[in-house]
Length: 206
Image (tube, rainbow, N blue to C red; front, side, top):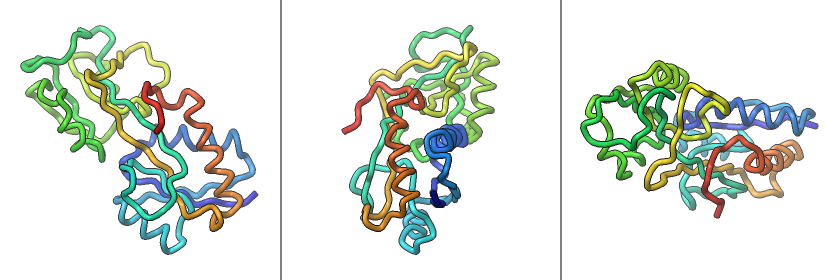
C-alpha cells in the first residue's frame, strides 16, 4: 500500500509510540511506517516543509502552525502512587518523594494549582519505566499523562488531578490533496485511536 514517514517529538513517550505503532499494524497491515524523531517542534515542521516526512504527532496547542490539524486527543494527567501508599490528595509538606517527569508538558504542569501541593523533595526523571518502577516500590509519587501508563497494573493507583489537567496531542500534515494514499490511510487509522482504550481520558475533543 506504500510507506509513510511519521515524525514524533521527544514530548511523546516510547510507551505511547508503541501503542500507536501497534494500532497501525493492526488496522493497516499493508502500510509501511518510517518513524523519525525530532528534538523540537521547529525541527519537525522544517522536515515536513522539506518533504522529509508526511505526518507529525506531537504535543501541541491549537493554531500554532501553518498545516492542517487532522485530529487531536486530550490526555489527562494523573497522580500516580503505589497501591499500598496513601491515596489521600497531595498536600504541602507530604513526606513522599515526588518524581517529576521531564517532558514538554512540565512547564504547563508548573502553572497548575497541584504544583503548590507537591512534596518538597523532588527528583527529575525522563524514564517513564523507571518512574513507574520506583512508584510501585512505595514511598514515591508522580504526575504522569494517562496515555503512557500501563493499561493494566494492579501495583499502582492513578487518580485524576483536582482540578483536572490535560495535555493536547495533535496529528498535523499538509492538506489532503498533497497526501499519499498511505498517509491518508494512516490518518484514518489514528482517527480510530480515541475509540479504543489507548487514552484513559475523561475529556472530549473540541
